[in-house]
Image (cartoon, rainbow, N blue to C red; front, side):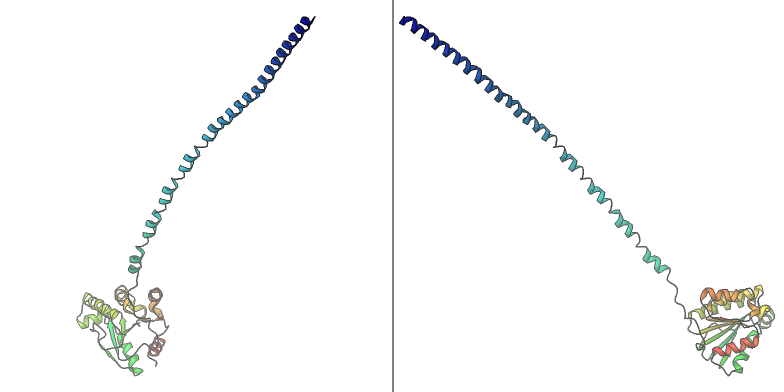
Length: 263
């Protein structure tokens, strides 16, 4: 009976050991499996490193900004463009007007006066009579090539073939004289009054040739209205800033010329 009891007791003990062993093996295995499941999770974190490595191409993107330096270098040609305006200085020197005498006005006409008939017409004698009437000191010299000591020169243009013939002077010689006289008066200090007193009878082709050569020397112009029907004198005066008077009658011209001398 005691042996039976011991047998049962040993058997129960063995069963408990087996049962405990079975419970311990099954419970520890599942516990370790979750831990192993966490390893794949950590491996996924490793895969995130390639993701960060994909951000590396951003460095080449920043390197593409380097071409902006050549772009700024292209702005350099603007300096050469600004340097091209330098020729404007020579250009301004080329456009500089030649020194000219200031426009004449009443009071600028001083004595003594030199009267020159260019073309040997009788109109020079009319100018002389005006000066004589108002007591203005003058001399006349149709062969003069300059102002001499005169402070005012009255040039009376108009061709008379009769007057040239009487003086034994050809048209060509008189024209050469007129050209030399004009050049001298333009560079001189004397005030030059161009007085055209012959009206339309001194506006033929030959007279106009002498008028044209003397106009550039004029500081002041007095022309009868009849001699300016085509606006030749007034147009020249306006274009060159020269004072001009256009009296209708010779009597008016006489008064205006005397007025220039304060008479």
